Image (cartoon, rainbow, N blue to C red):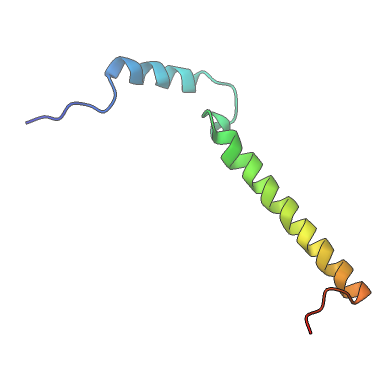
Length: 67
């Protein structure tokens, strides 16, 4: 007993040709790959730099302490 494929063979060949002919980097080939490989790390880096800067400011000025 054989299972039917998830995707028709013609559609699979079409997608393979599309991805193989792109000139972008491998990790940016998908539709939403830019979000996961560029935007999320940039957001994490920006938020961590903001929190580090705020912590340095609070320590140097003696504010933001809990009593």
